Image (cartoon, rainbow, N blue to C red; front, side, top):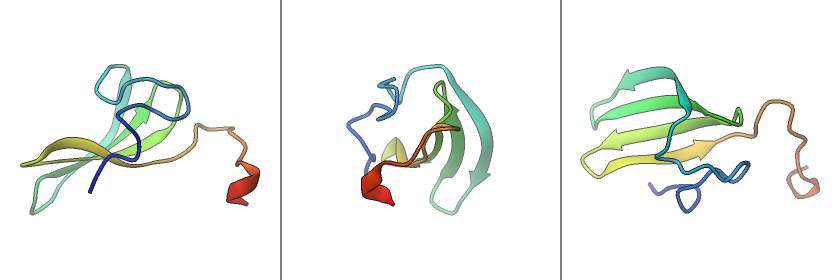
Length: 72
């Protein structure tokens, strides 16, 4: 698994490792921990923490964002 971007939110440009982000939920797994967070712009993110560190593996658009023509 790798980050979905180069360590920044593609919607607002905020660094993944920086605050503010809101923790929505945490779940322990056999390999580590899955943390659902919300970026300052509202994008929902899935972060995985394991022996390789913490990284964003998936993220959605901010609430109210319109999908791009390419994703339709």
